Image (cartoon, rainbow, N blue to C red; front, side, top):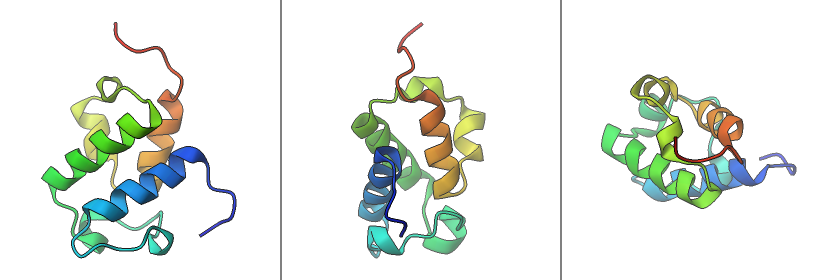
Length: 92
């Protein structure tokens, strides 16, 4: 794992690690691996993961459409999407 993880990357790795069964250490997660194919992430666990990581990073889950969520197939997809909305105003 790179030494220069952003707070969003760190939070996403930690939260993903916690929802995987069996749990995978955060530092062993491949940012480009397909979350469902490589780690067996179910749609329910994906929602739990995204809810927790959004809460931890202060990103409003409401920024994302169903299409946006479906497009988040890798950890890198998730962190890129979160970074786009980090510090964005909430509500509307």
